Amino acid sequence: MGYELDNSLNLYSFGSYSKREGNSGGFYRRAQDSRNVLALYPDGFLPQIETDVEDYSFALGLEGETGDWTWDVSTNYGRNDFALGVVNSLNTSLGATSPTEFDNGALVYDQFIVNGDASTTLDLGLPDDVFFTLGAEYRHESYKIEQGEEASYITALDSNGNPIAAGGAQVLSGFGPESVTDESRHNVALFVEFDTYLTENWNMVLASRYEDYSDFGNTFTSKLATRYSVNENLSLRGAISTGFRAPSLAQSSYRQISTVLENNQAFEVGLFPTDAPAAQALGAKQLDAEDSVNLTAGFVYTQGNFSLTVDAYRIDIDDRIVLSENLSGAAVQQILTDAGELNTESVRYFTNAIDSRTQGVDIVATYLLQLDNFGDVRLNAAANFNDTEVTHVDDNPEQLNSLGDDYVVFARREVGRFEEGTPDNKLNLSAVWNFNEWQTTLRATRYGEVADISTTADRDEYLDAKWITDLEVAYRPNDEWKFALGANNLFDQYPQATVDNIGYSTFSQIFPYTPYTPYSLDGRFLYGNITYSF
Image (tube, rainbow, N blue to C red; front, side):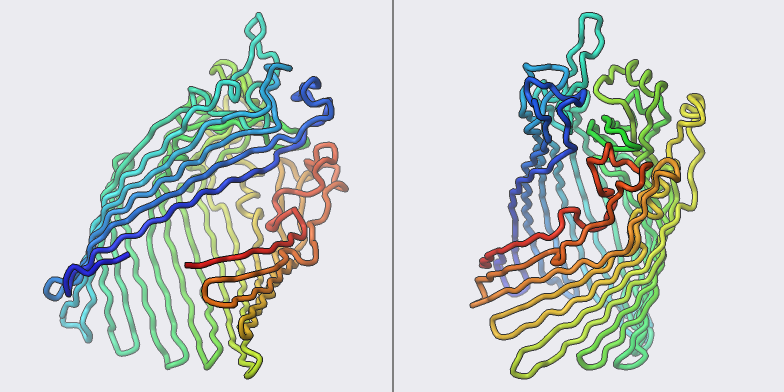
């Protein structure tokens, strides 16, 4: 929404609100599972996580012209409320008196931004004028964890002070008093950009940004980008930039206990902030910021209805923030007990444990095929080839070394997840046929091989490459309405079953597929939707 105050001054605003509710199933608890109470679930139970998410944002700004300058100042506020609950579950330690539904608490994140920028052209004695932009930004953000109901996190104790059974809501424990947090920070940024043509066909852009964080000090990043037009059809482009990313407030403060599956065992894992006593006893330390260097080089080719882009890239990240291994065993259990953590058997935390390098090539080709009286078909082919390597792993913390050789903060499983846990190639082919009010979309995606690396080689699982096909037919009688029928995974494809690999974590054959598949495990999904735009 905009309002013209005069010929060179405009007031504008916009906002949004969304509400989403979700439900997802956990791991099934069989009747004789030690985490079940037969009086409540004689046939076992499938716990489910329910989410209620609200997002809203609002922006107000003023833009105008003063002399040779154009400028824009604005303020933005956004908030996300993420309420968590568990249904069809129980708190085993409470026995038959346990509730079966729980309010687990909520996560709240909000952000307030004030920014301004101004642009003009400068004559610096170069072949062309320089388009110059400068600006400033102030950002304040906060992150809260709100406590859940007592039954969602408590562990009932016997007369000797020992846990009666597993505590907390099964599948996802609620946020207890020790999880409650209210963190905030702010940062101030200044930035400039110079954009000019050194020749008629050669464009150069230089940008720099300075930021000062209330919790991570200051940083200076820069970017140099260039584009050269060889002729009207072919352009070459490239860029080099440095980056800086402070740990998010959630990475520094989040705490949660949930059920995971590893090496044929289902158990509770606690994700602890780095300042938690249990995490520090296992080598956690305050998170640092990530630094990165990014390189890209490529070309753009257009000829009539055909276009082709090819871009190679390399991204080096130092002090990358990652999750540690799931640390478990008798020594860890004793540390948890000493710290009063009775709802979990394992610990993990965020850590700046590695440096990584990701490099690859993106290729995108499009062609618009005109069919005269039968509309047109937009053909698209996109391919990505990439490789990620963990180039450095920090020395193991002394706290873990003192516990024995089996305790490693970032070992085989996590290295494998980074290097082989996502496809190193992906091909997407699509055709969109527009004919009068009808639109038909056919899409075929090939996912390359994926590996689910375990703690030992005999438990590794390799997933073959697979094609997934989607189809949608839509009818648009006017600009407002759209009616569509479609199918995702039209041919009902699944990854190969893992039950033949006796070393793999199939948990007594309950889980026939590895969760590392890059596509859904739900098979064919049919849908219909009606959309109204206004």
